[in-house]
View 1: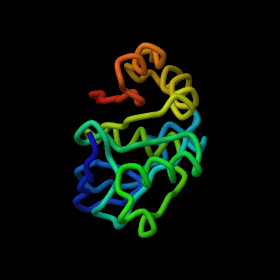
View 2: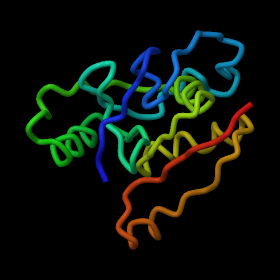
View 3: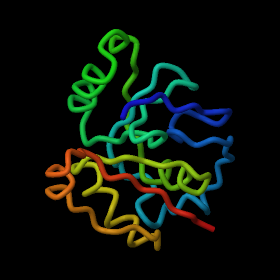
View 4: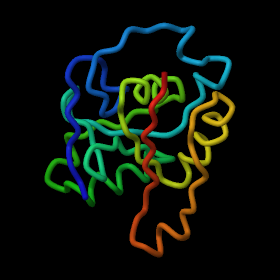
Amino acid sequence: MFCLGTLRGGIYALGCAMRPTQTDSRSTSMTHGGDTVIGHFAYRSRLDVICVDGDACLIVGSEMVMKVYVTEFDPANAARTTIRKTRFGEIVRGLRLGAAYAFDESAYSRFYPLALEAGLPVSAADFDASKAEGSRFFTVRVTVA
C-alpha cells in the first residue's frame, strides 16, 4: 500500500512524525551511531513524505533504489520528488515522536545493530519470509520513553 505521510511542523527528516521536534544532542544517541547514514527517504515537500504500509516513512539503502520505488509508486510525480540521506539519530527522534519507518533489507541491516546498541526494542527481520508473503519492507514502530 502506498500513501503520502503528513508531517505537521518539524522537519522532513523526521519522516512521518506528527509533531515538531527540538534538537537535543543528548537524546539523539550520538554515542550509538546518531550520525551514521542508514539510507534514503523521499519527499515532495515538508508535508508530502513517501510512506508505505499506511503511515510508515520509507527508508531504503540507496538513492538509486529509492528512485525505482518512487517511479513505481507515483510515476506522474517522480520528477518532483527529492531524495535525501537519513541518519540514525533522525530516525530515533522520529520513533520517539511516534513515527513508523518501513525499511528495505539494505537499510535495515544498517539500522538494526545500532538500534540494539541504543536499547531500542526492535526485532530481527526475515526479509526472505516477507518477500515470500509479498512484502518488501520491514516496518518499525516503537514506544520509546
